[in-house]
Structure formats: C-alpha cells, structure tokens
Amino acid sequence: MQVTVLFCYRIILTAPSLSLVLLSSIVLFLTVSYFPQASKDHGLIYMITKYGYIHLYDIETGTCIYMNRISGDTIFVTAPHEASNGIIGVNRKGQVLSVSIDENNIVGYITNQLKNPELALKVSVRCNLTGAEELFVRRFNMLFGQGQYSEAAKVAATAPKGILRTPQTIQRFQQCPAQPGTASPLLQYFSILLETSQLNKAESLELAKPVLQQGRNQLLEKWLKEGKLECSEELGDLIKAHDSTLALSVYLRANIPNKVIMCFAETNQFQKIVLYAKKVGFTPDYIFILRNVMRSNIDNGAQFATMLVQDDPPLAPIEAIMNVFMEQNLIPQCTSFLLDALKHNKEEEGPLQTKLLEINLMSAPQVADAILGNQMFTHYDRAHIAQLCEQAQLLQRALEHYSDIFDIKRAIVHTHLLKPEWLIEYFGTLSVDDSLECLKAMLTANLRQNLQICVQKRKKYRLRLCVDTTA
Image 1 (cartoon, rainbow, N blue to C red):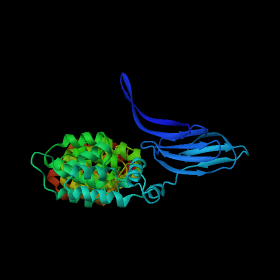
Image 2: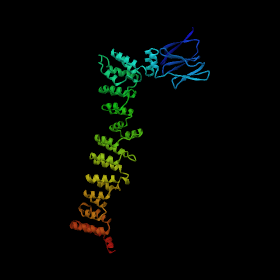
Image 3: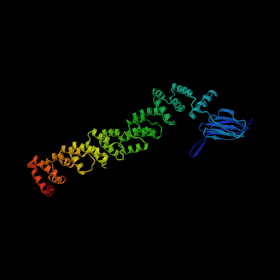
Image 4: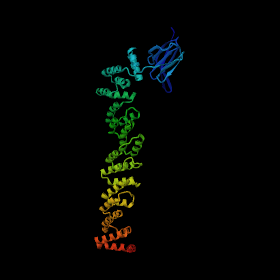
C-alpha cells in the first residue's frame, strides 16, 4: 500500500539565518485526500478526509489521539475555526460541520483511554489544561524525594492552573538544606519560576523577604519592571520598611489608592495626591493624611493644607483643616492658612473669620490688630470681636466695632490707651447726644487726664454741637 508522510518542523529564526527542527512525522495513506488544519493554541493537527473521517494528531510526537467518521457525505472544503480553536468543513449536502477538542476531558482521555501519561503531561503543560493533576503531583513528589530539586521545581512551575504553586510547596523548598557550592533549593525554585512566568502573590512575598534582607532592592525593581512579581498591598507593606519609592511603585501597580496617596504624602509629592485621586476616582481622607503629615513635618503639612483649599469647593472642610493646626497649637501656621483660605471674603465663611480673629486676639493681639487694620473681612461677628478687642486692650479696634453707647462709654474713658488724634476723629462718627455722653463719662472718670482731649474735641466740633443744641 502506498503511503505518504507529513513532516512537522519547528522553525527557528536566528538572524540572519533560519533553521528547521523536525518534531514528528505522520504516516498517511496516499489514496486518501486530506484537509489538514493546525491548531496553534493546542499544538494539534486536525485532518478531515474527503470521505468524512476526522483524524487528530499531536504535532510534537505524531501520535494519533482520535479518529472517527463525522459525515457520510463527501467533504469538499475545510477551514480553521478560531472561535473554538478547531476546524469546520462543508459536505455535499451543504452541512457545516465543526470539530474541536473538549479542553476539560482531553487530558483524561489521553491518560485513561490511550494509556499515554507522558503525552497527557505534555498536552496539559502546553495547553494549561486540567486532568493530569495526579500525574504532576506524583512526579513532583518523586523528584523531590530523590533530591532533584531543580527538576521538581520545573514540574511545579509547569503544572497547569498553578496546582503546585502553593505556600505548601514554598515551605517544602524552604525546609530543604542547601548543598555546598550551589544555590538553595528555594532560590532554584524561584529562578525557574522567574524564567517561565510571573510569580503569584505568595511567591512574590517569599522571594522579596531574603532579597530585602540582603539589601538588593534593585533586583526587586528589575522584576517589577519586567512584570515578574504580582503586586499586592502586602508586598508593598513589606517593601515600604526598606524603600518607600519602590513601595509606591508596588501600590500603584496593585491599585491600592490609600497607600499610594500616603506614599505621595510621605515623599512630599502633594500635587500628585490630588491628581492621582481625581484620575482613579478615589476620595481619600484628606484630614487623616494631613494630620499624619503634620506630625512628621509641620512645614510640609502647612503646604499640603494650603493645596487642599485651592479648588472650589475645597477638597476638605476649612474648619477641619484649621482644627488640625490647633491640635498642635500651631497658631502662626493656622493664621497664615486661614488668611489664604478666606481671602475671598465670602459671607458663608463669617464664622471662620470670627474664629481667625478670636484665635489671634487671645494669643497674638498685634496680629489681630494688623488683620483688622487691613479690613480684609466684613462678615465676622462684630459684637463678639469688639468684646475680645477690649479684653486685649485694643480699645481703638473695640470702639470701631461697638455700636451700643454703654459699651462705647466703658471703653472710651481709657484715653491713655488711645491716640488723641484718632480719638478726636472718632467723635466725628458719633451723634451729638452720644458725644456729650462720652465727654461726660471721660470727665467723670479722670478729669485731669481727659480734660485737654475734651477741650480739643469741643473746639473741633463746636459749630456742630452748637447747631445741634440750638435745634
């Protein structure tokens, strides 16, 4: 009987040359017409014959995995079917036939029906399919028991679905003694994993521990850039004790917004905090962050606080930010912050204006005097501030705010604390009756001290007083 042979090669491109490596050869009957189609994802060849038979071969070994008839009518055309990684064909009746493998059962079929565990392992590794778990575990345990740790590591690394890449496997390698002149079994295991895939969360953590202890942070940075480590909050926390910048990179990749923002804060990258939070749609607890920054560096905290109120509305309540300053009795810094935050003199910020003046009247009257002199604010509680000014012996500011004649008379008699020129001008703002009441109070309180001022006042406003009195 005449036959033909289908040769399967692997093409290796090594610039500038090309080489072929023979994988397998498949013997076919010459008298039969075949429609071959390769499945690149599974490493299999589908071949449908003209008379409706399907043949399924493994490319690497040439082993026939399956053969059956799928159509009683002649098939005249076939094509790959990408959706199923299989093959489709059309017969003379116009029927469209689709053939693909069952990924959940093919490895078990090769093991149990074909009695070919070696092929089952190859297909399982190549296609990352389940069904050969017992075979992998058995081989791993055998190699591990024989001390062939490198080979055992390869089995664990290639086992499908990561069935052997567990904390228990790591623990077994950790417990193995290192042979003189060779790398420890654990490092051999990790080296093989790094060559073939990305480490999972548990593996990344266990590898990072000895690397950080040796101070080889640059290795972790290299593996991160290569995508070899699975980034997690736990990995970031582990690295942060050694390298905040590298930890920030981990938190960014793991998408842990609160930790990212804390790292930005600790490295004084305040502008990035706001930009990052807006980009990822995260609303951090800005007051908590500010409080932590303030404990470590007051100047940086003050800078961050100012940044929080640049937007309208502010990213955090102004009053809450003010309270953070006052928790540490940082009155100068708090004053500077409030002067900037309240500079637009909004009516709804009246209570905060009152608080700013109150804080300084009770601790730094000269600063409060300067603020009032600049006339920056107009919505504070004037009566309350007037009383505080009087208590701080800022009588000029108190008189500027008092409107009740009884309060005015109480304050104005202390002329030794007032500039004569200002006091004389002040009388011009009072009614005639109130002026006379104040003159009487001043002379009663201290005739000798206040007589001269009263005379000057009388001279300047004589015409007005006379006219009003006559009227």
